[in-house]
Image 1 (cartoon, rainbow, N blue to C red):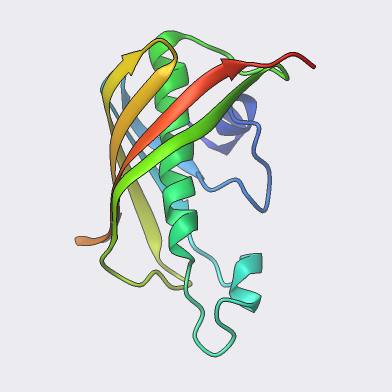
Image 2 (image 1 turned 90 degrees about the vertical axis):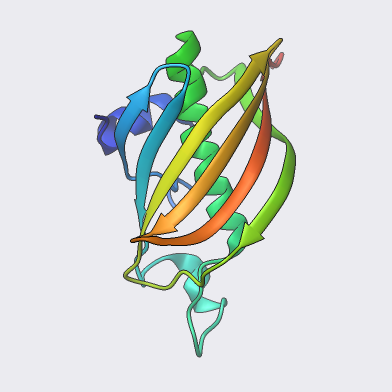
Length: 147
């Protein structure tokens, strides 16, 4: 439903921190499914860990947050500009269930639970095939900043 070119138009993130490669499906105001392809060329694998490359859990949370941002933007018709930012406001009940390694493809499945006054609460899961790799509740806020 959304390729990398569309994602780059919507999110301010760029390599190496852009963690959404494709959006498969968006249900406006409800849910998004996106993918992140995990490659051995990712810069964090050099140090995490050189003898056994593992994707850091915090980056799985960030990937879910980026997918959540795409859902929020689509849901309310907002276009990010240099004066609009989306921040983490909280992460609850984060659990890591499976190691993510080079060659894995992450399915990011994020549901919008609540949106009010610029505060968004999401429930997210990261799947590798049929296996749950990570789950969490994410709270994000969208704010205007003055340059």
